[in-house]
View 1 (cartoon, rainbow, N blue to C red):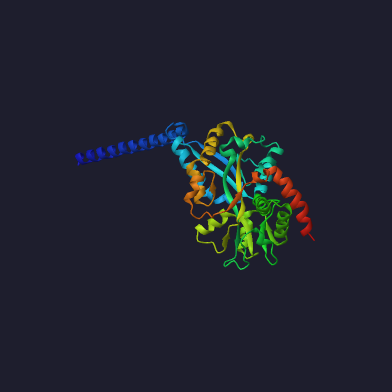
View 2 (cartoon, rainbow, N blue to C red; view 1 turned 90 degrees about the vertical axis):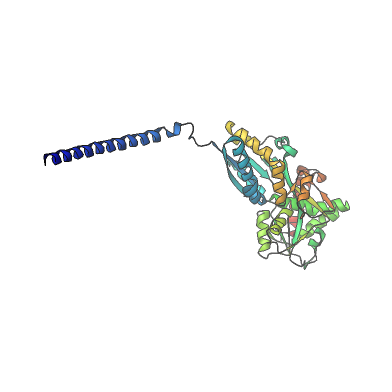
Length: 357
């Protein structure tokens, strides 16, 4: 019996030792976890990768290709090269609208404008240095898109060029030139196509005025005008080729594309708002700017219906239509002259006066 009691005391003592050991292990483990938690941010092998943020504003139709293709491709390339993450805050609207927002102080680092004219507006507001964008590749022109006409299936109004848009009974949907860069490109296409073909200013003016007498709906941006047309407004829409090819590639194009014999190639301008860029952001922003003109990015633009500034890449998109006599804004004296002589003096001061009741 005494031996049994001694054995019991032995096991009781051992259990007590085990309990003490387990308690001490729990205490030491807790202290270890607490210590790791406290020191975690300073451990060099667990620091999260540095993240940079770039703010980009762009004109309306660029939204999909930039957000879904161009910027993710750059993110992957930058992280592979540097181990750093780069994130983007983007906003896309009418070119005039985003220019107004930048003037009012939104913290954009980069803007992609429908027209160089909006870049000059930023110069006038002391946000850019004059012609600073011309120091970028291709003098700041990122890509191009000719202006075309969309008509209803079967082309019931028998429209084959801008001259047919002035015929009686044709209803036209048009972006608003007061907010949309695309609308100003359209005005140059409507006037310039007749002027450069006929060399007759009166004939060119008659074509411009005739088209605007038939405008039945306007919208703040090229994309919004496209939505109006899709919702049943009008017989024809004047817009970027890219807008039509985008829907065609998705199998959603229900209208027909008309390529005028002569039309303008819109050229889209990148600007850098240096006053919004911190010194430690400069390297990643410079890398993004170089990437935008790389064959990789330009090929993505071509795939999504934009014409590259590298003509050799455009052969990859067989949907690009043939234009017999394309022209650019420099053929009309450049944007500043074209704005003064065509958009302001002819369209705003004469055409609008004639068609306004």
